[in-house]
Image 1: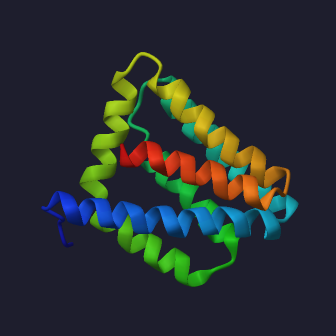
Image 2: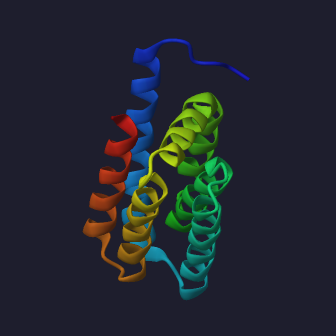
Length: 141
């Protein structure tokens, strides 16, 4: 496993993640079947359960995004995403833990993910890309 030590490299990887996930969200909105949407909703519900019980949400968050990327149908996105998660593991853990310590953190995080889910359920490609990008902008802050 390779660890990222420099802030600039972390920022660049998060920007790459934003580009991939925003595009994947749009493709998922176009391509998702009803069963795939149900799978994404289940991943969201697991994230919701973890967040509301103040548990570490990292695994559930990564799973939600992994399901979304799988739904996009782009196998290369998935391969790159797995590598990004591996490289950013410590950063992702830190971001998730910080979100849980804020009074409204879990609710805000869930609302962002719910917007992503809703856009995909509504088959709204542009909205899915927009809300995913907004979600990633929050991560970049």
